[in-house]
Image 1 (spheres, one colour):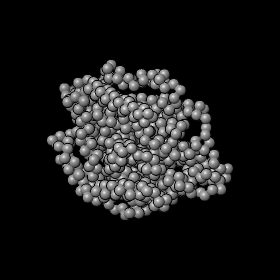
Image 2 (tube, rainbow, N blue to C red; image 1 turned 180 degrees about the vertical axis):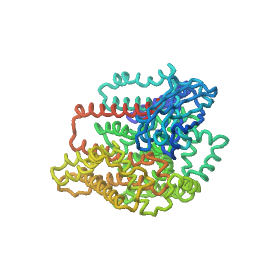
Image 3 (tube, rainbow, N blue to C red; image 1 turned 90 degrees about the vertical axis):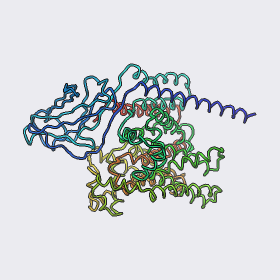
Image 4 (cartoon, rainbow, N blue to C red; image 1 turned 180 degrees about the horizontal axis):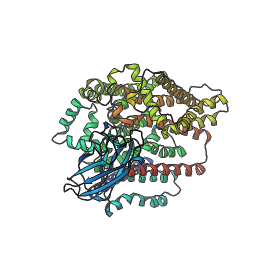
Length: 624
């Protein structure tokens, strides 16, 4: 009788999931059909500079618009780090020579290497298919003028298109109408209310993500004339070993409504799988809803929302689905029949990205060692999983001709890379870890340092242990607020054999050692019990493996042009560690849900609102 009731309940949940998925697909289809938003963000990396723009030299560039509602464009001024005098005039004219936009700046007030957004008074509603001319001139004397940074497509940083029609605006605010309903329907259910808020904000973010950006637009042009098979083959031979991702991109790049729906579902369900991988309950379930919004969402915009999310956040989602099932296997929980194929499909897809393949392989090997020591019966399953990861990694790294072809092209962006030996590359990777954690003043790493220190302060009164735990947080805050030390200005010019590089490496090792020591203390049962516990060792291992994915990027010249987005797995590794520590402390000290939950939900809304405003900022073409 009880099984029949559970089966009926599961059937209802499946029906609800299908209805929700169809509703989301229809909603996004309607939104994208009515909306004409977009952006062409050509590059985040400066390739050079124009000659000085003065009374003797002006410059112009043609702009082709592939969308209606052209609303703004971005440029990056450079001042030669000196005081300049005069006025700088920028004009945008249509194909009839009529001025449709004009901006004037005082050269003395411009900041060096700073991006400026030039907003049109009104969006050009019929701009699609038209060519405009952008011209910059100046009355500055020679030696007193400024210049513009150049990118892969000239000196324009990006174009932005903005649809402000009433219907599109109404569709954008539709998700927020669900908030009062959620509070009413889920009153008394803290997790349900917090999760509903999370879903609403995630949907809203996707409605503001401009389609047609960067590589999304380029992929759409490149795939013309290709079948799915010929596309994957072409990319395999010339550019990318990520054949499964390339196949997904082929089908989705011209179907943004389906990508939006799929990405929304993945990001909305990601907290559920993270919680399952951690096996948390009660109050601890809420932490993930606050932790995920800590991720710097604009990293996923750097090469186009669709292409970048498929390459990185979809891998994260697949990895956590895999991890949630792997935890059940390791803890000898019963698996449903469909969880086995889901496990291997997600493992295969996630392992198609070389960095995630390394991460998952490291986790599986850890589980294999543990299974051998404890004589678990799941060892054959784990060995099969390791084989899948190893074979996929071998195919990705060793057999794909496109990897070599891409590396040769990327040498243009990193000209001295071929002079680096293995030790240099390790130093370079460690330097990048410091950049994405400390120099970038990353909030995820800051929270990790603070929660690790707080955990040790709660667990022990030993002054020495407290000082060790406090060191990473103190150094992070001191470097960024008081000293304003920049780890490196440009990754290309890192002096790898200098004492400074050796010092930075030792500094990184010290920070990591302090964090791992703090984790061991937090997960220790008692003051006099052994320092290294199974749980503490695994959480430390996850932290180190996540950081290793950023270090591993140094073995490819793409470390420069790919930017911070390649550290996505490192960030989510740190999020996992934060949640593990928070869950451990909650289980140990059992704070009142009534007193703590409102604070957690408030932080969740604050962080989600911040990320939404960040996405809206890009959508409106606002930089800086």
